[in-house]
Image (cartoon, rainbow over all chains, first blue to last red; front, side, top):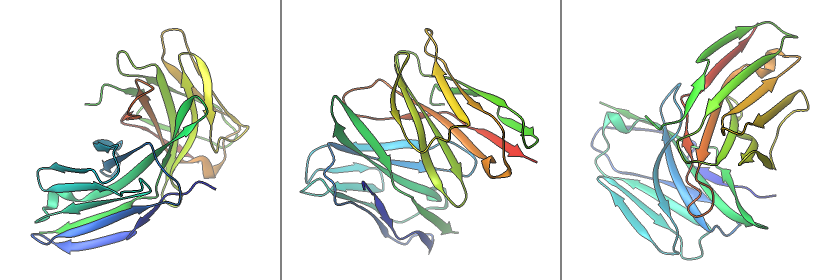
Length: 113
Length: 113
């Protein structure tokens, strides 16, 4: 069974704190995406990582793809209330002639002012 | 704004009824995905179409069906509705091939009474 796990499931922190959320699988991915979803809205793509060991930065967000392309992490520095939302990772794996994308269950982040 | 449109935004109906949800992908995107999201299930992949053809099936019930038309818009038909079908239904589109990045619409909130 192809499965993406995310941890922690819920996270509540004070504004200004740092945090890291994780996305793990036993499967190898050709690429991995991170999305943020706010209540009642559709997920919004944040970043795509493709190469094992790759690190990408988006302002205060740092994304890392594991060397074996089975896991990823998202680190947020000095969290702001605007960072509140559900963070979803999605992994793409080769399925015959196309890539199959699976989503993790998400980490729900709440940043308290 | 992702460029993906979904109608209607809200839908309230009764058990046993049938509804149709509509999605227009981003200009140039050939692939359309449908997802169901409820509080206790997370984002569940239902079905994917690519250029009018069904490409992948997820956890889609037999009471549900979808199609993608020549102009690439897609419809998701839900029939014999049950209380448990109440959820947010998202459509996403992608260029297909390459990075597997999906762009989500705003969703349709379905309430079955």
